[in-house]
Image (cartoon, rainbow, N blue to C red; front, side, top):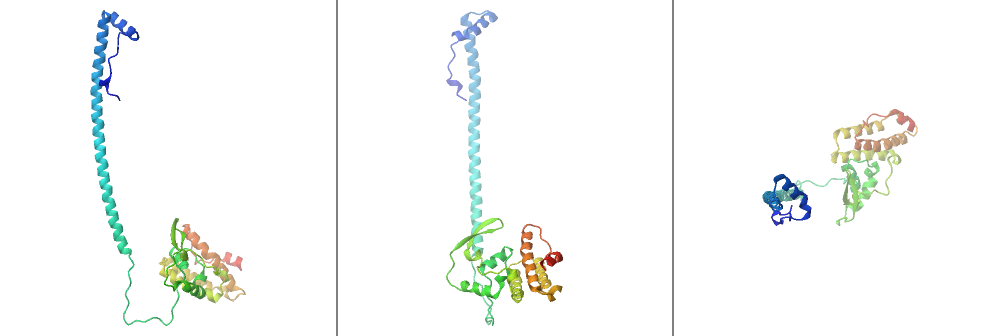
Length: 273
């Protein structure tokens, strides 16, 4: 909106105003000069009204600008306060997460038998509640993992992993599967029995739900002591059934359709037999 005070008075003597002047002459019995005078007076009165409105609008705009500036200043101060509080909170969290070296019990000594833990890849699978082959809990796998874990230098090679639908960067040893891995159904049956015990122990250490751990323990017990145990090739049948069920159970749990793994599907077992 332009400043009305800068406007110039129209020249009402021009031909484009002939019709208006003619109407004033006939309506008010005035001559041409009187009609022009009335037109100028009306325009000036209108301009004064518009000038007052323009000034009021400018003052209102100025107030709004000042209020917006004040609101912006307050918002910036609030955001800065929140940022400072967040920085302080993060600093406290970092202090909490700093590595702390545990102490020891005086007088105790190392165990007679040192048990090698599974590989970082295996432990990562347990921490994300994913399926992992029982071979990773075998002695051969743990001995293989020990070759790389008993080193003072850090592994600075990183890879990308998907955790809870988010991409994360982590050590390549925690995302790289072993080239020597065997599927469950190819394990020797005695090795399968030993590996499942190690698996259950490390799943417990990874804080798997007690209900799930109990179901898996009973599932393995049922497989080990199934009524088919006297049949030919029973060990291969049991291993194949287990190899089919366990990965499917994990997939269904992830999808929110978990079922009771302890309940044996006799039809599926018969088909495998």
